[in-house]
Length: 190
Ligand code: UDP
Ligand code: MG
Image (cartoon, rainbow, N blue to C red; front, side, top):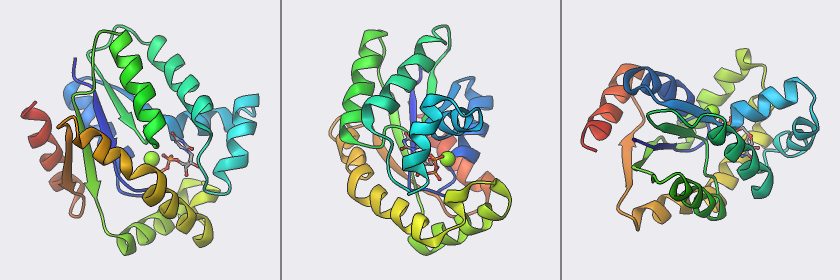
């Protein structure tokens, strides 16, 4: 199996690139952000809980996110591999993911980080907000909070996988195709 973590700040292009990687390498795309938006759209209890955090740009608590992720993985056992997009976002989530992979007799193959400067990220998110229908893409205070949370809670995940020799930075500025080619070069080395 090839199990990838697509990592990077909000607005770094994870969703866009994950969709392309999934097609090329035949992996299952699991975006916890998309799963939360689906739950919120259906106004489920999980969606209602998630909304109270997402609308502030905060992280949904680890137990909630990990439980939802586990359900999705367990519902799809017969795949060639997973691509995790926007997860893990904390060290505790990383430990839970490694444990889950070990239970399935597999492991994370690599974490690929899309490296994009702050100014570019804010520009991209505000642009996306015009059409995404996402309230958290429209308000600069919420966007800034998401970036702050990324720096304080999420960025340590890079070093966590760095210690396992699995973390790699990829330049996330350029055309969608250029960035995709860079990611593929990293995946093909695995
Ligand atoms: N979120 C979370 N945990 C996750 C995924 C998403 O708490 O594992 C919440 C968080 O509030 C985040 C929002 O959902 O700001 C949107 O996440 P998504 O990954 O879709 O946005 P991105 O960071 O890719 O722009
Ligand atoms: Mg996303």
